[in-house]
Length: 133
Picture 1: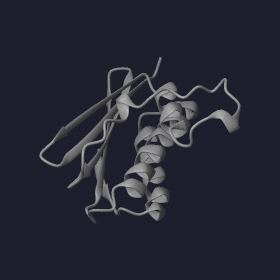
Picture 2 (picture 1 turned 60 degrees about the vertical axis):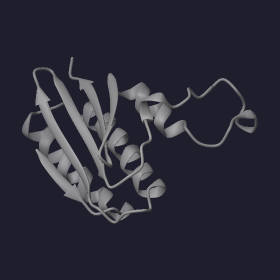
Picture 3 (picture 1 turned 45 degrees about the vertical axis):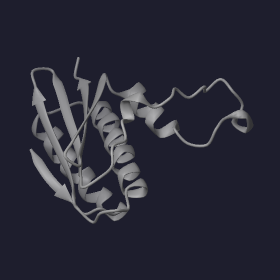
């Protein structure tokens, strides 16, 4: 199932409805819904906040393959930024000692089972997998 969303934070409620509709149709456990919503919210929000060079819609594609949910967040007309290679956040350090930023992507990486990044011809494609088992 694939849908395009306006490049604005206010699209998040539509995104959550879209994801919920898809996962409900497959009777996916509520805890999986939370993880997938959090990951998509963080990725979508980062795209909106940090890629202001375009007004293109952002595409979200979500599928179920065997016992996995595979979600793709696709940005169009953008610069390359590989979210799978961001630095780990040292959560053992005190807040005052940490650098600002990166905690959201850190949480995404911890909540999903796999994350991949592809970039080609101005299109950024972030794919993550969440196991249902």
